[in-house]
Image: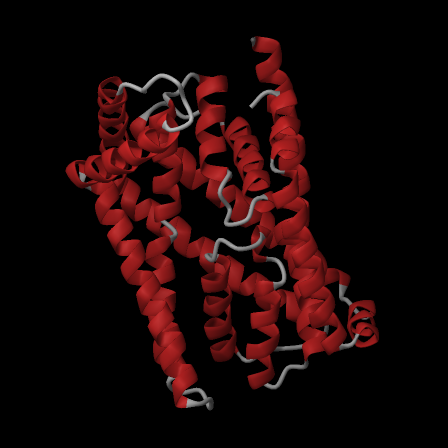
Length: 350
């Protein structure tokens, strides 16, 4: 993405982005109003600098492990760039994820940067970034199943327990089906061809000349084949799968600990069982393609669920502010700088 293309993308999608962030502002304002602005500020005034620094340290460790996992996958399907360059590409993809509703921009941006900077075929780069995301699923499934079991012991209504458990298991089934499709070339090609045919038919309505589907068909089949080959190779390689699984498990563990640290920073020690359940609920909300970074939505869920655990909304919002500074604001700013750096680099190379 050339430097001018970064700004072109922002201009083309400015209405969606602005509307999304306005919605975020309204939701956060309403939650903060309910929690009490003065109470939230009072909780933040007593923030422990030690735990605040620890929060940033844990987030940095998660990002480094994420880069290591992606590099592990890339070295299997292609030759990975040097670790610092790959780390900057990851930051650029995080910027793409964090400014678009539903985190839609990150994985294609990673593949694009690999193509333009390293010469890695787009479909191979996209397969590596997609497989990288899949590695997050196994520990998520384990934590989700644990949460579904633990929530049955929680003192909440039966319908709430059943609803949360149903959402958890439904998410696991959907992810499992997506992984299966990604590993099955024939099914993936069939879905891609069906979608492409409908898309070509729709676009042809606005063109004077018909678009020939035959040439597009061959290209789609070729790229999907390369994508599924790289995707399958990653997940079927025992060494990469085991290492990727343990790296992902470590990332999830650090993230749960980081959430605990955010509460400790404002002087609250949340009970671990509710924390794990609520953390899983927050992740489920983050998967919804509604707002950038699920800002506001995740905070609302945390306030509602931690109230059951006996923690006030003011402390939950204060902890969320500390969380978001390290997990959203800092990586997004660093990612913007990385995207602009690579944009200038690509523009100069062209």
